[in-house]
Image (cartoon, one colour):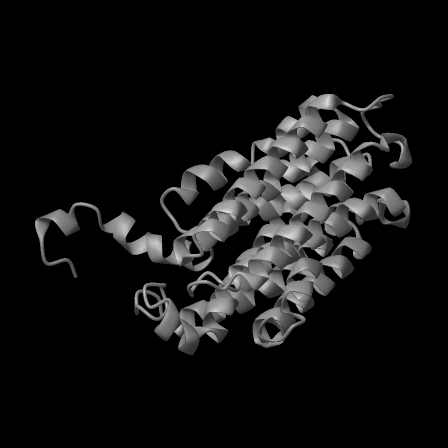
Length: 314
């Protein structure tokens, strides 16, 4: 299979990287951060892994499925605009990508059911349906960013699914804000293959900032969450500081794309937005539940960042 000693010396790396690129492995960890954040916000305990761990794995499976199927549906477009991706380059077959995506999409609700909650399985099934709707055609319409945002909001809600009333209004504000943030990232991503397409960038940056304001508002009302496993009588300023730093980093990446509207700067703004999702979850959890739960969320950033330096995430 390998024609030279240099390539034969590292067959594993050459074989597996396209498959990791197919599912955007760095981003998969941000999905797990969503559901764990939802779990902690509504009073779940880190020690209760038998309930939250299946939800995190369900999030990861559905996210990876959505990305793989996205590339299946986008094959013809990617042949022109992104020929280096695993499918148009021929490094991964469309047949494999289709079966991988379908299998993971079906597995998501089943894994959520393993947490012991029918409600969790129902939320996961709704999330899987939204993912499929986005990939199959919604992304090509003006509804695309909204559907993508709904997927992220449902992912956070998956973590809240075992709380009474799914956590209540302030918890829903967190899920809704994460949804709006991803709507913004999606609008920005629509310009990443062209030059000078700034309208979506402006829309996206406005939505990102509105979302962060929503998260700050939720963080300022810690008593409105369900009775927590870790009682925090006052706001933890460390969490609020994290949210403000994220706002600055996102604005920095977006402003560079405005000054120089080139594909690589749009891609950087998208990547910054995607990796910021972990820190947005970390910030609001740290503000409401304390530093230790916030650090549990931040731990997901490490593999996302390290792998992101090796595997593209847009």
